[in-house]
Image (cartoon, helix red, strand yellow):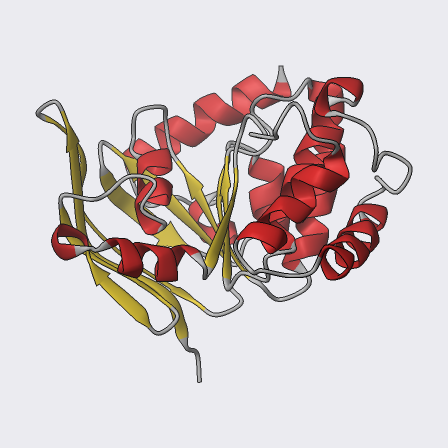
Length: 252
């Protein structure tokens, strides 16, 4: 029997009177890989950030695993508990520039999990080696490529043993030749069975890795389903228009 890992109910969010999310309901099962597609301004990133309260929704509730938080009544302890169940990979890496890749990765376990330096370092070294960064441990972010920085960012998320990993357009800041190496790393993570929510424009990745594709526009979910249905045979005209433009751009 499938078990819900993330449940969003009636999520609404406005900025300066502009309604960005208009009552989103979405349930994601344990181990499911969900890709969220949609045009700029559709609310994809805002929705992702509402899951771990980087943005506090104006209304609705967020459930991760067995923890439910009412967005209007969320206290600091509730938010901390929810965040401990999630990890986020940002589009611009968000690495500390004054720390090496290894130091960036062990920061979370040392500060949040209160791990010993040896425990954190041993695990970090193994994970960094798995993503091809074993020889870059002592490099600073400025000394490696964007793709290598993003792979370190993925390891930084993994080392926290989250229930859910949130990916916010993880390849959008990369040069085209570096996109493949990061997508390969994300595919490898997906095979471990962890629940993943990925905001991306990479159609080929969505086809290959996603269990479900969610298409958003104008702050609402327009349609969702298996990638073979949503990408190859979209029901809604809004989805068809978006995909035809996106495929054309990626083919050019």
